Length: 278
Image (cartoon, rainbow, N blue to C red; front, side, top):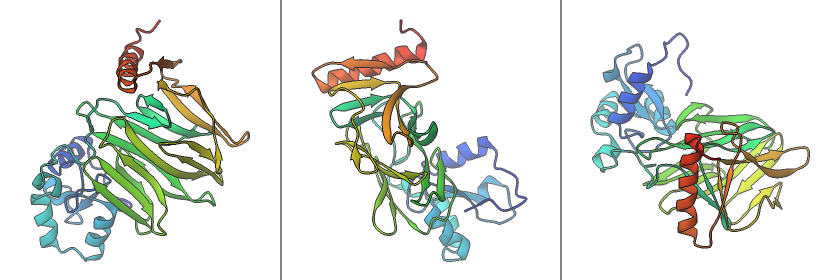
């Protein structure tokens, strides 16, 4: 839900305080995708602001959640009450490790780009809290929703279903098809996406990558790609691998044992970030 015209932005320090107090999720349901809701319309006091997911925020805005209920949920946030003090998207690793087929991707930041425009980004903070940024378009190239670092920035939430559990998130269109699914209950993270941009469809799951339904071959099997992104080219109708421009290069790790390959990939990621790779 858009910020009310003329209302000052909430300071970052206050946002951090509100997220921490709420257990990094909706005060009512715990969903890790959230907005900032003013319990009292004109108050900028943090005591009068709470975190709600877009669906619960709509309930509060239209009066389906009373002021008394809002105060109750702010005082007793769902995640805190259930022991998820670091939020539902707390992962057991310092950096996202994503499995795609027989390969793994290690790193953070932009992961899926279309003509160099970021469509999906994943990051983990110092405490292992996963942060998601995604742009959700329809097949007609209309921008439906924008999420930045788990905050629902824009878009009508009503056409969407948000389903979450500990280390699990699913964003589904009301018609039933899944736009995004993150399952961090295992390591590496299992990711499923079905995204649109410029009238083109991009799908990814634990088995394969597809561009308009055509399976893509983007690399050798049984490798760990470190500091690499998936870039879709709408002219060639193909995906390709590119190194993260922050580092100017990526690293390929080959090792027969998957867990050892991931461990070596994480070590390579640390070296890449420290600038110590030769």
